[in-house]
Length: 247
Length: 352
Ligand SMILES: Nc1ncnc2c1ncn2[C@@H]1O[C@H](COP(=O)(O)OP(=O)(O)OP(=O)(O)O)[C@@H](O)[C@H]1O
Ligand SMILES: [Mg+2]
Image (cartoon, rainbow over all chains, first blue to last red; front, side):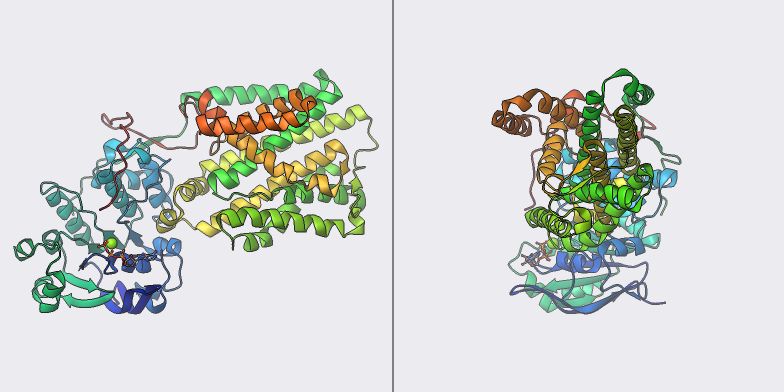
């Protein structure tokens, strides 16, 4: 079985800022990869490259055994790649239900009653059912993040790319989210999850990657990665909470 | 994963009470409108044809800009193409004028397709200017063709064997069918999956693409549909005025009218351009004697409405979207008590 995602020699720069430099890794189907790294490391950029929002300067991306390097993000979504944006991008003049139905009807290719059911289920999983008919422009930041998740789920993805969806949650709100993502992974969806809250990541992911300055510093067993010297050095002096990571 | 499926069958409503009222009004209109030639004089019928052409243009511009986010200032290109195509096909080729109109519409669409590749290389303000330039180029080309009357233009003779009374009645009915079709097609598009995609693109094209919406493909489709609609408006104008002159049929004034109508009527709704066209048409009738003041008043009105009624006159009439004659949205019917109230708008929070 080929990996769900295989990234090879990926590079991307904005002017002088290198956000991806010779990045290569692969993710096996039905597993979860966590990504950590300091601010500006290129984590979100990596998701944009995988999702097709940005075109790479070099390198290749294969999804489910097919080369998708030059495909549009619309085509990638139809193939089964979904992405939540770190800074939410709601369709502000559409209701929450309509926002999510876009994901079902296009990426998920389910319309009409089947699409409505998919949408309702994605709303339920993300805890947004009670806001279904509210215009998305009126949502608070936290609900906007949930909406990102719901829309991504509605596309019925094989690979879901999550960008800091736990940010802003209280300690009490974290376990349900962790449970949800674990459930997603266990149901066969491949997950790539960027999060600064390392203990939340460690509760779910099978592998962990640490990115810094567009390069992979370490990848592999989550605890080994967190214990490696380079990773600790990168995090020294940053807001990273080692106590939580070790727990 | 043991995810409880709470909505085994999600119930979604698309019609509203107001849309049933709207349907009734439209049915009555469609029953009465065909009888108009028996009720009013020729001049009034001609004016109504003008109104219909304005509704068609504005509806198309709304589709382009209000849903597709394409601020075109060059739709007069297709108005001109539609007008010239009608005259050429009916008079020179000798096809029945009623058949010539749909052919002219198709021609406008066909020409817009390659143009879209050119125009789509530009975005934002450059797109606006680019479409304008393209319209000027189309006019220049048409003026070079002797068979199209060069710089002088052509006269439409397709209906010349009819009495003036019959002729204007035919043109009226033709335009009535045209405007009904243009609105119906727009409504059908906006209710379909395509329309859902357009609305998403309008709000955030990047997010729409990430959810599987084929942005460029959808935009191209809208661009071609809007060109066909403007081609139809052009054919209506030619059949009504009997005279097609390059500098008037390709006039940028049409672009200004479209924008004005959509802005005062309300962008992003199907009803808005219709309301806007009626108001604009009435203003044109009442104020045309005032010369330059007419333009000043139109300009002031546009400014006032943009400032105080961002959703236009239809937004005001509909109670900020509470009434929809043409509902395109989706409402989840709550299985239990879903809070259907609107949230207090949260203060814009930014990421740290
Ligand atoms: N569209 C863009 N144009 C120019 N520079 C960009 C663009 N997007 C990202 N960058 C830059 O690339 C670098 C990496 O950004 P990215 O958003 O990928 O970081 P990140 O690892 O997700 O950081 P954070 O943890 O803060 O979310 C940053 O220096 C950022 O300023
Ligand atoms: Mg980021």
